[in-house]
Image 1 (cartoon, helix red, strand yellow):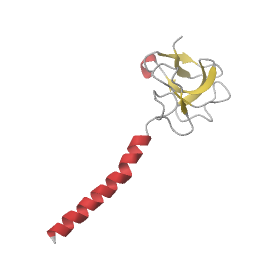
Image 2 (spheres, one colour; image 1 turned 120 degrees about the vertical axis):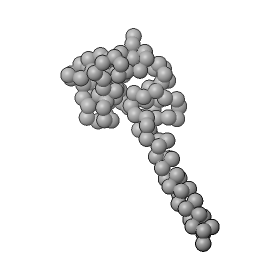
Image 3 (cartoon, helix red, strand yellow; image 1 turned 120 degrees about the horizontal axis):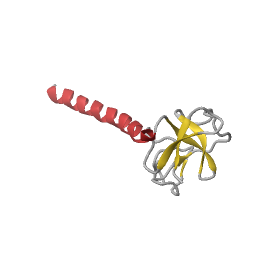
Image 4 (spheres, one colour; image 1 turned 90 degrees about the horizontal axis):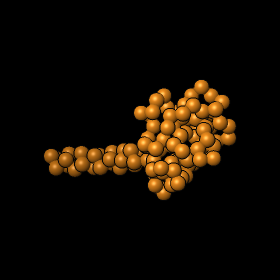
Length: 114
C-alpha cells in the first residue's frame, strides 16, 4: 500500500512539473526585452542589431499604447516604429538604452542610446 501511494505521489509530481515548467520557460519575454534568435514570443522578432538584442513588435502610430503589449508604447527605435518598454526613470531601462519622452504622448520609453 505504501509503495502504491509513493508511486502515485511521484506520478502527480511529474505531471505537475510537466505542466508548470513550459509555462515558466515561455512567459518572460515581451517587446523590448533582450533576446537571441529564438527567445521572443511568436508575434515578435529578435532585432539583433540593437544592443543586447530587442524583441521587436512593429506598431503604426508613435505615442500610442494600443496594439502594443502591456507596459509598452509605440516609439521610434533606429528609424522603425516599435513597441518599447515604458519607463519613469533611467534605472528602468537596460544598459545602452535611455528613458526618453515619446512624441505624441505623456509617457517615456526605453530607447536605444544614439
